Image 1 (cartoon, rainbow, N blue to C red):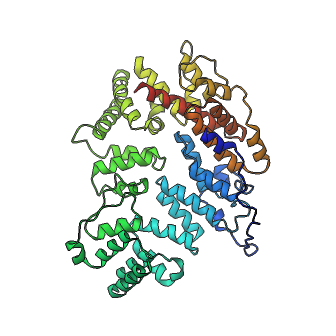
Image 2: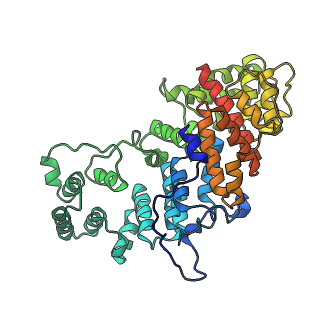
Image 3: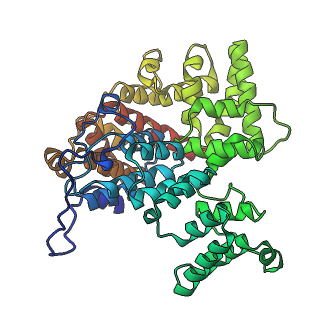
Amino acid sequence: MAGSALAQDEPVARSAVPPAVESAPLGAPSPGAAGLLPAAATGLPASLWRGSDPQTLDALIGAVDPPVPVLRGLMRTLMLAEADPPGRAGDGIDHLVNRLDWLTDHGAVEEALALLDIAGTEDPRLFRHWADLSLLLGRSEPVCAQLAARPRLSDDFSLRVFCTARGGDWMRAALILQSAETLGDLPDRRADLLARFLDQDLHETGRPLLPPVRPSPLEFRLFEALGEPLPTAPLPLPFSVLDLTGDNGWRAQIEAAERLARAGSLSANRLLGIYTLREPAASGGVWDRVDALQRFEDALERGLPAGVSRSLVRLWPQMASGRLLVPFAELFAADLAGLELEGRGAALARRAAFLSPRYEELALGLDAEGATETAFLTAIARGQAPAPGAPLPHAQAVAAAFDGAPMPEVLRDQLAEGRLGEVILRAMALFSSGAEGNGQDLTDALAALRGVGLEDVARRAALQLVILDAERARR
């Protein structure tokens, strides 16, 4: 019910104080409008956010957690779209910061940096993001150079100590650290870490350091400088990008690629390339998935339906347990559709077709006669109302959405007020609530997505939710 309330309730004023008035030079470009995807590429208007309250949007962006890959892709598009910031947002930098937060949290580090290249880093809020992302990727020199040229960009004493030391002035760095400690401007743990960075003898004779659960990029680099690099696997998702190089071994590279692919921040083709770099030299866990996929690719190249079917039956549960069925379908559904498989292999190939971006085209070639599941999924793929009775999760709620269910009135009103982006976010929040079992919310979410013209997204979201939840129930 919390997701439903978030999606539909109107915000309540928190204060009777008149809002602050912000100003900007006439004709000045708004940093908050920066984006990597122009309207021609997204189909979304420049007014996407304009009619919404900035605080409402901030809360929605922070709260929405799309449960299926196609909605994660839609969220990514929203965060990267060129669009004017919300009304009364001034330069829109706070809105841009929230977009950057979402991208970073979901592992889209390079995209966030590219967005900052467009928006610039002259504002301290944007400089902080740029510094964190650059340090995460090990690019400290440009950060320190810009901080030296424009000290006003950051009041972070940790960064100032680090950069001063990197510049060779260790004595001044120690004085800055001492002053910050005296003024209470640094937490004890950070101050201890920086003191050890400045004095290796102190580190060698001091008590062992406890690694932080959620280190900042600077802390990550300080541990590295002390000769105690933190393993990235248990760290938040953005740190996974560091293992994509393979410097920490093939297994770490595979696990990082899988984490990022699940978040929608790594393409299916790149994941496949990492899976097939070499032959696995071990078994169990991720190695079984790699071995099964490589054997499946070999069978597909030979083109013998019986061999493909056997390897697919072996691989499918591996990809399901890794929550990677959608990237798998993106890679192989079309090839499978061209083979005459039988039995369990044929059923899995049909599911892959519905999970594929080419779901509608591939569904046209499927025989839905006598197969309740296939008939249901085929109707959804064509945007039609399916017959009731399919033994699939969420079948009734999904069927209702494609049988003419209207967009919720509150969302229609918000759309009429020019709050398109907000309506899409609320629809995704409703979808999350519906995925947890609230059927009416799921129906409303799909009806809303269809109502704003996101028909393809609505169909794919419904297909992915139904199929992926069916696979989870099977395990």
